[in-house]
Image 1 (tube, rainbow, N blue to C red):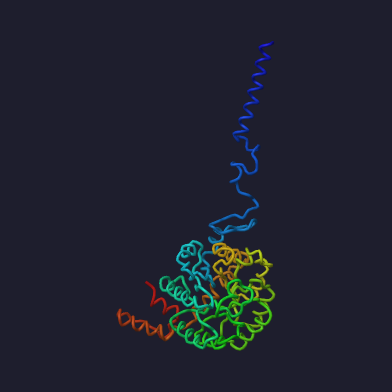
Image 2: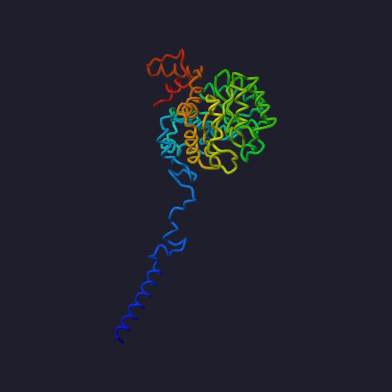
Length: 373
C-alpha cells in the first residue's frame, strides 16, 4: 500500500512537471499569448490583404490578380501619369505589363520650369516604347506669349496632348506652389492654347482645384468659347461629387472626366464610393477615362488595382471597354500626322529606300514609322 502511494505521488509530480515544461516551451497554441512568436505572424482578419504589392480593402470580393486576369483584354490606358519625373517609368514598365496596363499617358512635373526637362523624358520614353507611352507635356508658362511657340513646336514634333496643366490650384500641396500655375482656366494665353489644341485635335488635361466656384465657372466659359477643344478635367472625382460631374458633362460634350479611381477607393479624404459614380458613367459613357495619377497619396500599384475595381463595379463589358480604353484611344488616333512628322518620314524614306503613303497618315501611324524598332 505504501509503495502504491509512492508510485502515485511520483506519477502525479511527473505529470505536473511535464505540463509545466510543455507550457513553458510554447507547445500548446491555445495557451499562447496574442503576440507570441507562434501567433504574431498569422494573418489579422481586420488587416488589408496585400496582393501583388497592391492593397485591397477587407471585404473585396476579387483580388487584383483576379481582376487583371478578367479584364486584361480591355487594354487599359492610364490617362494621367507623372512617371517621367526622375525617370520612374523605367522601373514601372514591368509593373504595367504585369498588371495589363496597355498604354500610359506620360508626363512629369506640372507647370513649372522643371517640367521642360521631364517633357523631354516623356518624349524619350515614347521613342523607346512607342507602343506603350503616349507623351504629353506641360513645360511652358501660360502667362508668356512664347508659350504659344512651345505648344506648337511640341505638337508638331509629335506629342499627343498637353498636361497636366495647372489651370488653377488653391489647396493642392504640390500644384498650388508651382511657378507657372494659372488663376483660372481662362488665364493668360490659355484661350489661344485651346485654339492650337483644336487645330491639332489634341486634348489638354487641366488641374483645377477646388472643383467649384469661380474656377469652374471659368472652365465652363472655356468649354463654351472653345467647343472644338477637348478639355480633360484631371482627377475630376477628387474632392468632387458625382452630381457636380454630371452637371458639367451634361452641358459640355467637349469635356472629359479623368477618373482617379484610387482616390475614391483608397484615400480616407474621399467622401464617396466608387459605385456612386457608376450611374454618371452609364449616363455619359463616352466622356470618362481612367487614371492612376501615379498613385498620389496611395501608391501606384494600389491605384492600378482601384482602376480594375471600378471596371468590375460597372458590370457592363461594353462600358468598361469604353472607359478603360476606347474613349481616350479614339482621341489619340484621330490626330493627323503633322508637317514635321511627314518631313521626317520623307527623310527616312530617302535614307532607307522604303516608300510610305502619308496622304492620310495619323500621328500614331507616323510615330510608328519613325520610332518602331
